[in-house]
Image (tube, rainbow, N blue to C red; front, side):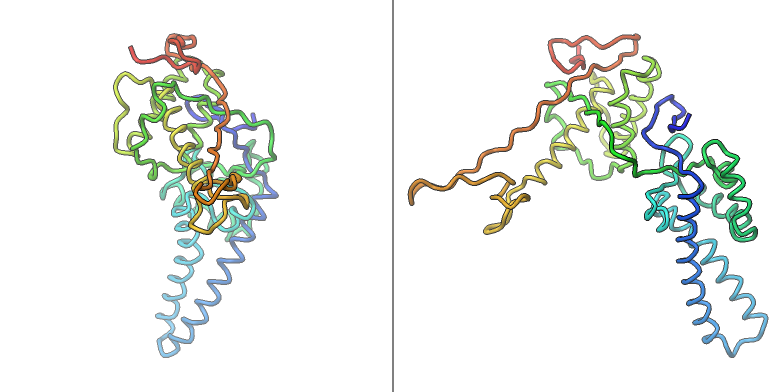
Length: 313
């Protein structure tokens, strides 16, 4: 299976990266790191010319470890798996379950990379990537990580099911700024594929994702709201905020996003000197309806709504 499957049997729309793209990303990273290492080494050699040979050797070893080993580890940790080479090639390091990596994952990958890439000139890493079914080198195996492709050819997109009407606008005051993009991606993947999942597994995934959102926002999931409906509501709220920012009126005298008046829609010219110009409001497209899988093995009752999410009892 080429697609990435999480431990909860959720199929993510990410594909494992293969050897050519990974080799190109590593070559870019090594070129940048080696350039920085040479520049810093020259500067340190000039600055430590008066020191003895033992001190110079210690500084050289420390420089090697900090730049060639510690540098990539720090970059992957801070960027959650995106180094400069991986960013250029559209790759990313993720955990086996599709989540973002942490320091321990980057540390194991970097430590193994000394042997696989630096000491053996990439031979061990290439052999491991060719042998592995998902293109993983030994560092990925020991760290429990996988390099995936983020940029894929565009295909038929599946719309996220809308929330129940009784939840629209309920989370307007919720702070969603601390929810990372990786979690939004996982929620979207779940909502668009929840009908394909086993009922019990799908419900557990929804509760776990809802708990992650609650932990990030600091606000627990309200009682009586099913986890899938809560996830659909917060995604709908985020999309609404993005739409408001995209169609927000421009500053006085400015133009809209599409060269029109504020809001990105044409401005109706005034009829007379006392009549102000009016702006037509953009009409949101009709959402795609999709039912949610409940814990009982079937779809939740519609409860009078057209979304497939049941209202609270």
